[in-house]
Length: 189
Picture 1 (cartoon, rainbow, N blue to C red):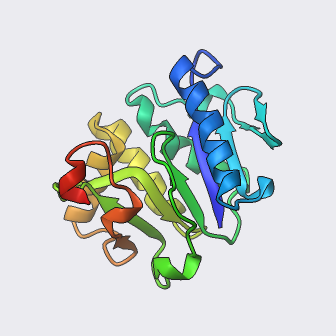
Picture 2: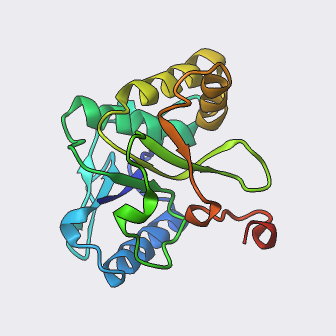
């Protein structure tokens, strides 16, 4: 499994908070047993910390409609460049911290291309932490298409897709423990 972080910024640098969170995430991942080779940081600028060197994508992966949706644009670009291999990937935002080691078998994703939580207190998909494999490019492209077409965020786009019946058999709703979130924490726990 690969541990994936994405940060695309037109200013070609981390903002102060994300710069600190990036270092904390890399340290945390290494402390939890991830190998340097299994931590993938994707940016649109050069960066290296504790042996983790960023994969640099061009500025075109920045989503001008919804900057947080840039993660989906970047994943699509990674597919296009052949950077997504036949492995499981765990994408998570910089404020979503792993507390315990994750065993790929515990995820029970056999037969699914994406594993994602909702908000716990709200059934809308939460893209702050999700697992995906190399068979989901069409889903990622459809999400990205909805963002641009409807001028909405990536979560709303995915809701539109799944409410219409598309991709529901390929996306597993995961236990909220994989993305507790920052709102209604006690309720989610």
